[in-house]
Image (cartoon, rainbow, N blue to C red; front, side, top):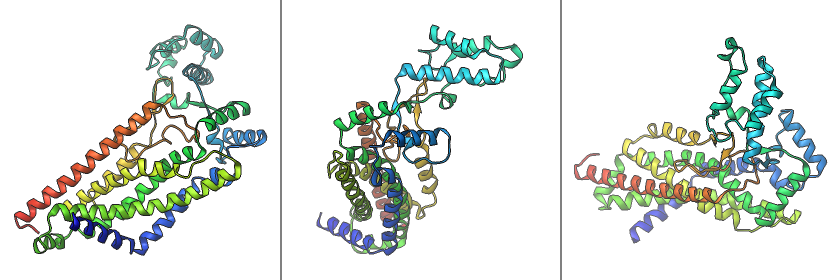
Length: 385
């Protein structure tokens, strides 16, 4: 155990001595803060009615001015999501085909066609029956894929609805709690990319013939060498991320004090250690196994890119509402999958999903480390270099 601790401390200190990695910390912090200008340097969420209306108008006009408009939504019920989707779809069909849109909308809503039908088959059949046969093949049906164009989980609502919604949430949670979840999402994803850049050269540099020579001459067990280097490298990356988290936390707390918002100094750190750190350890274990076995980072790069990008699409139900689920295989916890919405109310099932996600990460870490130890032990015993 003493030797393992010394190995961890050595590689931790050695990693911290690399100036390029410190430059990366500055980049991570800068990119993270650029994602939070409205939350850290403005009166958001206490907008005036004029500011609120101006932001919504800018978003609806798609002027390119995002600002806080993406965060001003109010969740809609399943009933509202259904009605919104029906009205938007009927308007689309009536615009492009000979269909009485108002009549179709009233008929569908009054008979509640496809309300409990996830594939919208009854609604699609009705729409097609109202169109000339020669036009039917050109109609885009309403389904889970096309719902993104016709439905949604949020509506901009009125200023009063927005204020009531936000005020109600801030009575239940600290402003820093919402910031912590968003930081764990956006900052966590940025740190994952930073981890790729850090872990790949670190492990690749240690995956050559010198590793086997050290193991043979110094009589160090493969498990001590591999786990020691893995935890040393990972500890350094976690420390880098902790510095960025501390800086954002300081800005957030100052912002809360200035505006009189409820806050806790520990919220951002809580989400960092609970949601981001396990993801850093997982990425390190996967990269470590690949680079040590193949002596190159090339095989792991496509996997990392797919792993990062595959979880960027939200899951939607048949009504177009974004289902608040955390997929267990995602590289990190993703809240922004649900929408670029700041005050997102996460159901209890989401936190259950997060626990499953963390259990999966723990299993993956143990499997990768055990596989690396077994493979290296086998190579050493057979005299491979």
